[in-house]
Length: 328
Image: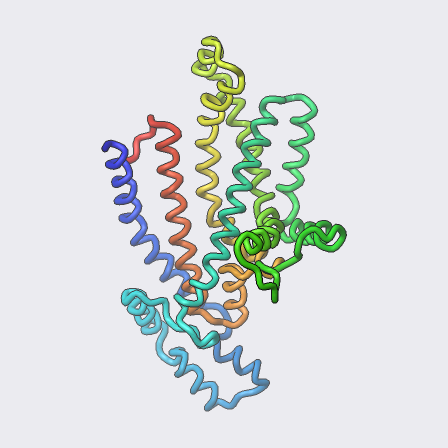
């Protein structure tokens, strides 16, 4: 019962903070996008090769771009209040349906990347701390520093060169084999083969961060009194490390993971473009190039909601990892 009340307090606090935050994000994104040069009518005119003033006026009237900016904002807020994200004239379909088609791919990519980053980061960081000052610590420190320093798109391209072109082990792009009629376990394995490279490319930068942070946290926790007490009671080193050291060291790591959730979503734009992965990041890139601001606003709104949800999950995880943390 106490845990349920705790959960309800977290959800109530999150809702109260989320509403003005999301509203501010929508308004800010709207005005920032309107400051960008060009609009959907200009892009379509460029694709046609030329357009008369009458055609441009007709396109802007069709897209709702011929009214004052404040009126456009109020109209968009009214559309959101009615439960709709608007309509995309470029894709000729509602924005919500378009995002719904791409959202599962992005969630799969991000979820896999976060799991890889946290699992490898905590494992590597713990190993570095347990061998502090010895050669495994030095080798892993150099390795994590390397992945922290290099650009994510370069890592993705190198993974393609090595594992797709040279070795031929994994596909270089897409989320499934085109033209293959697969079902059941064959379809799952095919999706996993296409997921490995983009998820790893997105995760390696964060593996380096979480590895270094876990090393520092484990070394700090290892010197505390409760750890020495547990060891004095005769617990095995593995039990002491798992129950008393790593569990407490996870708190700063998970805090940073919640902060990085938005960065991972932003990094998905590059990774999805490099690997031709059909997700929100690639959709956002295409929307920028086509000046389809309704779609881009919908993607940005959903991204802000995902970040809020991720930070709520982190708060709940902290309460589970350390019951001393009071959730207000």
